[in-house]
Image (cartoon, rainbow, N blue to C red; front, side, top):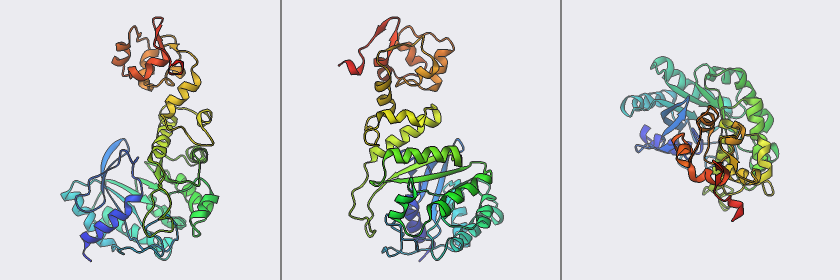
Length: 360
């Protein structure tokens, strides 16, 4: 099998790992199966995302690379992958590498091959750009430390919100030791771009379960981002006949993540709009506004905390209003960056207001 055929197989196999929110991550394959635009470090990178190999000894029920699944097996040699990446860097303007792997044999064996590839890219070929290194569950401390010295960002996929659900999906991973302990190690290594993680959304978990673990990850592990992947059944896996998880669920959790990170909402805020542990299908900010405001508020008298809870008004617009930019008509709000139609039902301007949604 030639290198470009491996690139197609392993690039496609690496597509299950997120290097950015799915709505922002754009695949520009170039026929190779794994070149993406993704945001990291406040920049947009053209990322080559691939597995080192796809023949896994783990038995994760949802994964196309799991033991027992039929697939075209492929694996790079370290020098082969390094040369391929540098070729892409030179000829296709790829400026970042996202490297993961299936676990053939044991995590350390797979990680050593990944490390050698990155070492060649960095030291033999002099690449100084972005490298995201995926830490495999169960990898030894020394190898995680070596990876941290050559990577901008690292990640360990937690996959599920707790050990009970993990045990339903895989018999090979100890949730606390193989995953959370590795995250704690990475935290102490002070990576420039920190670490991220990914969770699969399926029928075994509720949104409340996800938010509880998400809160712990942000507060205790100091992750930069939590990525979500709605479950999709893959032919040949043990869950191939299960229903796909609605993509709207994934999107609503990204909405909540954004409100928490950029608007500084509290996790507990969302309890009031959940039904049996699930977020509403509508925009969570809109749902919270309906539950919070019993009447429109004077936009020129509102506090910053009140303003950012109004649909259509974000932190930047709220700060401009607080700083004395008086709103005399709806167009003034638009000029400050607000979305008039979203905000109208919840605000009063110069004593005038539109009916609130709940009044219809």
